[in-house]
Structures are given as structure tokens and as C-alpha cells.
Amino acid sequence: MSRHSKELARNIVNEGGIPALARLLSHPDPLLKRQVCACLAYIAGHAIELADAVVSSDVLHKIPGCLKDVDIKVRMNAACILREVARTSVRHANLIMLIVGPAAIVDFISNCTGDARLPGITTLGFIAKHDEETLAKDCIKENAHIALKDALTHETQDKIKEKAAWALGKFGKHSADHANVLAEAGILEKLLEVFALHDSSAGLKEKAKKALMKIIQKCNKIQLIEPLIRNGVDLDVLTCLVEQCYQLLPISLESKKYFLQCGGFQKLQQLKADGGTKLKELRDKINGLYPTEVVQYYAPDAKERIIKKIEEAQD
Image (cartoon, rainbow, N blue to C red; front, side, top):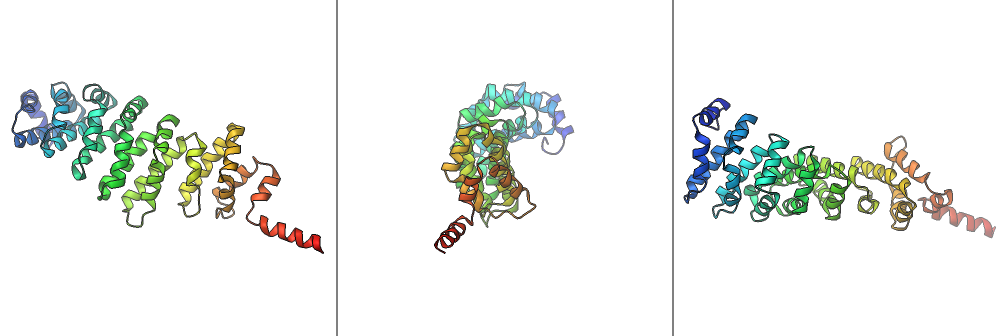
């Protein structure tokens, strides 16, 4: 009944169904608990006032126990309740963080595989999606990004990898602190790898690309984004990388020295950048931050020019 329409779900709530269902979450029968969790998830997913009815009962306090149930379907359906509540509003996401806690969600994701993981992954994404960046930061403190990277790396189904990439983008969008932690964990390289795979679905490629660009745009450590600059990278992603470098290089002399010493400046000169493109424009702007002799030394035709000068000197 609760699955089919908001009206039917509201009838269940109006007749006092939520407290009765909440009590059954402690029942020893796993088949019953599966259905109870599914019913509560359907109710919460219809409307904000129905989600309120679910969280105002004792349901959330019993979710941590359900997430550790021996029955995988109970655990999965319990995570579905969290997913439907988390997507409703930042207030509901805060209640999940306070009562259930991010550690319980991360632990759930880390101890199951396949479809069972999906509602937990999506829950983290919905929590991080809200504008209150402390929610995402608290999840990161519990290694939510590591659990999501694991799903992106080891899951075989693209639909699961797609949700993991989507969630990572939601975590990285908030600030430099969020993005730097993700980049330091190797998540940019993993997203780029997934995006470049020929076998990745269109949906996975789209989500990985969006996540990449959101995280790159917030990174404020040039050493975290410079390694990704290379020919063969998608033009939009490459342009985003170079643009972020251009934003960071003028900030300090150390950044400019690092970019030169680590080989980033040389790689920049070797990029295939057609005239009139934003990539070419950004490369010219970065070149303008360095002395002319440095630009000439690292130019692709530098070797030929030096040889020509040697030959001319011999003449």
C-alpha cells in the first residue's frame, strides 16, 4: 500500500501505523523486518511530512541495529529508509547524522557488495548534496570517501559505480578542504580512469566527468592536480585542470617554482592546443607568468632551435 501512492501512505500514518511498524524493527524474524523497513522507506519517500512522521517515531534510533542485521535484505532495506529521509531536506540529513551517525553508514557500505551497497552510497550522496558543508566534512572524517572509492574501484556494475562517482562529486563540491582530501586519496585519478575506460557506460562517464570537474575546481594545491595534466585526457577535463592551475600559480612563488620543477610546465607546452581554444588561451596566460627564456627553453621546438643556432655558429 505505502509504495503505490502518497495518499495510501498518508492513510497508514494517520491510522497510527508508524509506531506499530517501528516496534517491529526489533522483531527477530528477518522476513518481517525486511518488509517493515521497505514499508517505512516507501512512506518516507513520498513527501516531507511523511518523512517527518517516520523520523518523529523511534525508527532512526533502531536503524543502526538494522544496518548490522545478519540478513542482508534487512540491512539493505534499512539503508533505503535513510536514503529516502536524507534526500528530503538538510534538517532530515542532520537528524540522520545525529541519531544514526555517518560511521554506521560507512560501516554498512564497507561490509557488503553489489546491489546491497546502493542505498548506502546514495544516502551519503544525498547527505553531502545539501549546502551545509559540515555534513559532508563529518562524513569524510569517517572515511566515507574511501568507501565510495572502493565501490568505484571494485564494483562490477556500472549503476553502482555511477552512484559512487555522483556521491564523490557531491562531497568535493563544497570547499578546498573537501576537495583536497579527496584528491589526496587518489580519487581524481580513479575518476579519470573510470571516465576513460572504453567499457564504461555513458551514464558512468557523465557522472565521473562531472565529479572530476567539481573536485578540480575546488582543489587549491597544485601538486594534487598537476599529475593529471597530459595529452589524451578529455579536452573539457584538461581545460578545467589547466584553468585551475592558472588560478593557483599567481598565488605564490612556491607554486610557480613547483610547477616548473615537477615537470608540469613542460607537460603544458606539449599539450595539443589548437589556436582559438580556451586551452590555448590558458596556456598562453600561464606562459605569461614566467620569464620569456623559460618559455623558450621548454617550447616543443626548443631542441631544433638550439641545433640551428649551433649550426649557424659553425658557419
